Image (cartoon, rainbow, N blue to C red; front, side):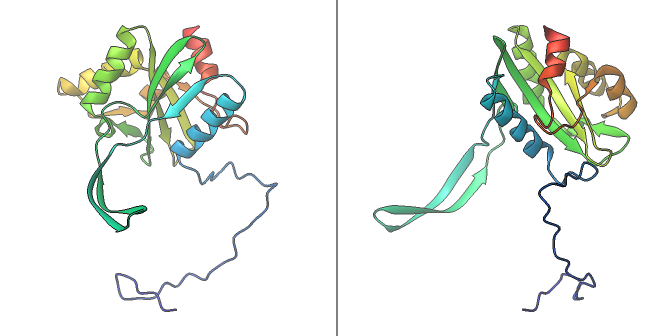
Length: 199
């Protein structure tokens, strides 16, 4: 089968059989997105009765549906809506948790353009009601993941609104956040940091 490429040239890469060892864990290049890691972590928490935390589904606007048979329907056209709040919420140790998870390939700073004003407002309201709101940021090229409580994150957002820099430097994140180490079970144990900071 011939495969065409946008530049009209064939790929020079030779196909290699993927390494399929179940015993090997590659911690250098984990190959999973932050969302995958957090979903695995939340599944572990739920299975071990530590917390109930779920990713909120992205709302979808259905535009066109075909009904080829009376018993079935096929969505032909749909669009993702912008979520109205944050990525994850749940309950832990009697407290409501709400957080946004973002990742970047940038090695020196985290762009605040990754966040939307309505998400910041939502986390502000959660904190006002004594829930625990925070941000998890992943520097994917560095293999570093950080948890920043909303009260520590919000000043950087305000700085941007007042005409300051439009990102948080890696040094600032390291100074005002806690690094979440990678593990096996759970993969990203962010609740250990919540225990230390909030209980």
